[in-house]
Length: 322
Image 1 (cartoon, helix red, strand yellow):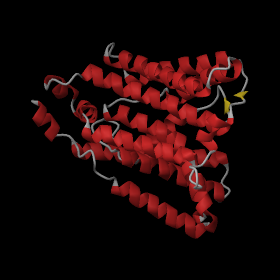
Image 2: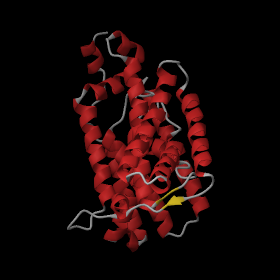
Image 3: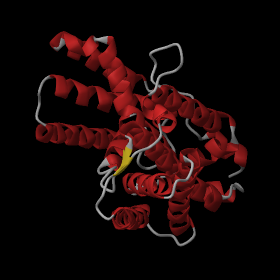
Image 4: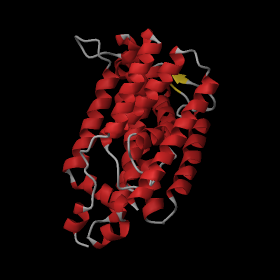
């Protein structure tokens, strides 16, 4: 199969997940009717702020899922990168933005190791990233020694708590959207995006068409790790602290956002904007449950059922494709 034939089999990268958008609108209308506080403009901004970290993680997770893989380590990498940044800034006096770049680089290294284990040494993605999840979490706990590292300069926390000058728009929301725009550009107009879809659609055919499968699978995990590092920067700036227990269960929300947004766990299908819709759906549900005073324990149960339903829907979609 040549490159043209492979490209012809790819799904439309710019397709919009209308179902996810319809679900999001229906949820918003329903919650607005049940709780008028939901439609308060400040609450809507709060929802966007609450989903920022998950949406960034889900962006990287989506690229990995496009290749037919999974990354269970992103939550632990968030904690690991955050602790390293905290030690550099608070304990060693390193410039916070330089420390942030080093934290993102650390996330990239973790992702690259995942990618090499999976693409070069043929480990199953779940096994490789599960190992990294344990390593990164253990490293965060060891380095932190059980403490919370806080005390960052205002110029750094502006990323997580500041607003765009002259407006009331939070910086973190704009930053998140810019990341999605950049990701959309690469997925739609660059070889990187077409290769990820092709690898997930049919890895062997992609290899025979001349595309370097090893390179692009590794890159997908590297990007996922880098975005975990970026999510850590935003989280630390937002909380003005780094914690070794940060990021717990974040990988589940990231996976759920991608699947709810239309990404197939078998790879080769999905969209960047669909993932954003999925992250917003989870954020709206959580916000609505909080407004309705639903206990945190019951919220976990409800979110768990939603994830299960999303996976079942994905399974039915894949069965129809086959």
